[in-house]
Length: 85
Image (cartoon, rainbow, N blue to C red; front, side, top):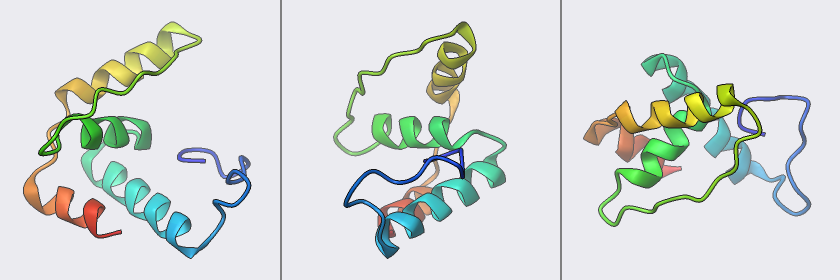
């Protein structure tokens, strides 16, 4: 859903708001040279009240991608853009 156009939204989640959030996430990721998954994780970790996500990786590549979020700092403008959608 975040990175693959061939993966549909889950039941009940396919609406304009979800599509806008994914578009904003992808745009920010492209601007920062990161993946959408990294941006989403960095957004969760760097908020006023950090959220520590629990995720599963099925490959070393997926783990490496997720760990890349730890080095990604979202400035206030980027965070505001993501929060706004």
